[in-house]
Length: 452
Image (cartoon, rainbow, N blue to C red):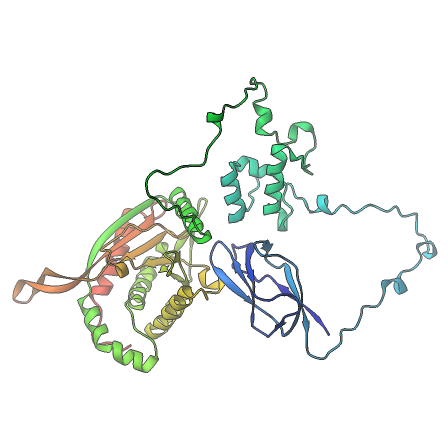
């Protein structure tokens, strides 16, 4: 019977590795095609990996909590289809005697050095990619970016892996791990303890030894889960990356509210999905992005990358209080019904932990509905590497002055605040305010006679 390799799937263009959270199968278990084999986690999303064949689990090559590169073989499955695997023919039958080869000189054997052959030392000034896991370890251990550049990488293309940085840290504390790039003693990373060796050694007093933080009063200490740590990390990185500016406007969405109230029952009966406000907001945003394409861009050094595909990210709150941002790919190619179905599917998958890795990739513009929880407005953080995010506040009835043919009058209207945070490196105030005003006008001029 044939042995099939289960591969760690591609998890998006920027994701190079994933952590195995839990194996659903163990060696000897039977697994069906597309049945979940394991659960994995990346810095983007938790996901399930299905089996690519039906058979018996022969071997699991990694343990839970192991960090595995994309494309690596993680398990072997013996197909249960009655087909016997043909054993490979021994290579000895085809190996000629070197002495019998005409004109051959004496060949010297070179010993294979697996560790050094995998180590890659980047050229000075060359950019290197570091996974979120490696960056987290570096931050926790106080490893600077200049020190990261010194660490030899054994990963794909010389990438620094978890094992590499942990070995390097251990070497700095006296474990003595050698680096393949050390051409001389001067190029070997010097531990911090060696840098201050000239200072007189003083035995630390008991009060100088760091103690565990104590919290007074009646408190509950809760360790952040993995998702919350990643959210915190991404928010800080966004602040450090983009020059945040937020503009505000108010919007009269009375026409939109009345139309939805009139058609939502028929929509659900005909389409089998609820019609929320989110697809209506997304539809308006898409129309305005086409008028202001720089809002659908990203920054790469001194280059502005204007995205032609409009992939709308929608911030979604999870039952545990965490946040995930699934993406509607090519949202501009969908009509209102298509947007509604996509929004409902992604929201349901997010709340039930069924999002696929690709469901959170390649977003170009983000919408967050802070009004869902009663907030009137907000100043959202930009979802990197995008350059803008729109926050939609709660819809409230308010008395406002409106213009009529008979003159100004006061009426009860459904009003809403919109706030746009944008990257001032490429989106100036005039562009940001113009886009925000265009979105408000699009919503205010909603066609009450349209069909869905």
